[in-house]
Image (cartoon, rainbow, N blue to C red; front, side, top):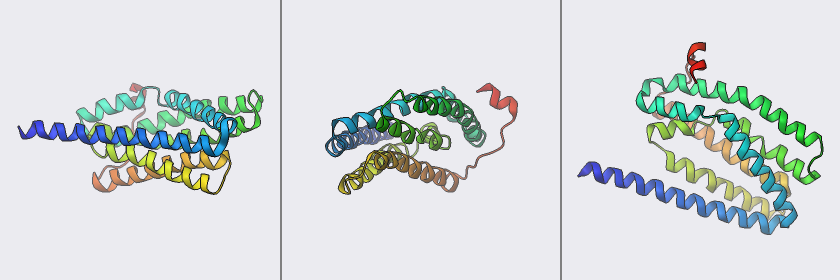
Length: 207
């Protein structure tokens, strides 16, 4: 019975975090629409859209595999942290070059090019973002999910208060991602005693 209660409690926490994250995300959108106007928000939305596709491409399923392997054997966490970073770093190079190339061709308006270029910096942050490790260990997921959106909303409110431009809203996104990535990495290092370990080439190839 206590096991069932533990499962229910975890689901309740995760569900509440997802709901809270959705509320923060909606609030962020509303603030940006009000502050940037239709054209400005359109440029920001394009930047976020390109970022979403870029993140999917740079992860390329590697973090899903790492989550499964780590969940089955926690001793592989160190090697998997390194392997996922290597994978993401390698894939991020051509992805960012394509994005820069599109910006250079002026296929978008100036504000849209700026938004795409700046929001895409989160691809670099994502290289060392170990959220998948928290999912594999079933620890700190809610804090990361809610924390990232909460920080982003806080920074967006500051940008709106100072009537800042698109660059500030991109900085809000990149900054919130960076803070959570660093915090989660420190937590993994201190709380779990795990560190990035060298991964053999053959092990990396399996991913």
